[in-house]
Image (cartoon, rainbow over all chains, first blue to last red; front, side, top):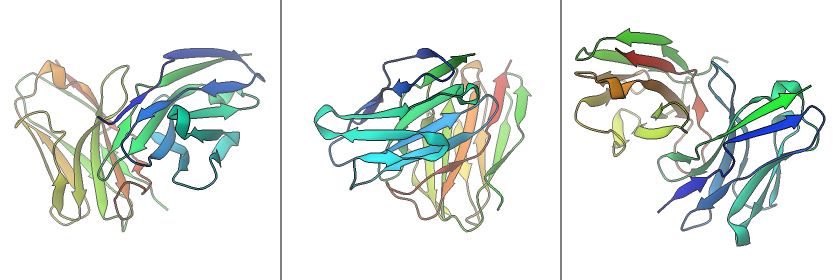
Length: 111
Length: 115
C-alpha cells in the first residue's frame, strides 16, 4: 500500500542551526514526491517537488531535499533555520488522482 | 493571480445539521481536490474532480458526504446530518491538468466545528 511516514512529530532547533526533516515513503513505482509547509491559519504551500532526474532538489525559502531510492527517503534540509521557518511540514507522494500525506513534523525555532 | 479560495473560513454547526463548504479554484485549473485534515494529522483525500465529473470519490467516508462541480469551476462539499466526528479542517486544492505529477495548490481551508 502507498504510504508516507514522517518519524518525527516535533523538532526543536535554535535559530541559525541546520535542519533535517525525515520522510520515508512506500510506493510501487517511481514516486512523485512533495514537501509542503503549513503555517498557523494558512493553507499548504509547496516548498519543492521531485519527479525525476537530479536527486537533489532545490526549493523556495532556502530548502532542499534529497531523493534516495535505496532508502525510500526524501528528507528535507536547510543549512540555517530562521525563526520564520517555524511551522508544520508535510511530505507527500503523488498518485494518479491524489496526494498521500504523512502526519507532519512540527518545527519549533528558538532564538 | 488569485489563488484557491474557500468559504466560509469557519463554520460552527449543531449535530444533525446540513452544511455546505465552497471552493473557488485557480482560474483555468481543470482538476479540483477535497481533503480533510483532523487535528494532529496530515490531510486525507476525499474526492477528485476532473472537469465536472468526480474522477475518484473513494475517500468520501460515507454517504453523508457529497460534492459537486457543476460547471467545472466552483465546487461545493455537502455534509448531511453532521456528526461531531466530522469536525476538521476541510481543504480544497486545484491543479492545472491533474495527474500524479501535477502540483496541487491549496486554499486556506474551512474549519468545521460540529457541536
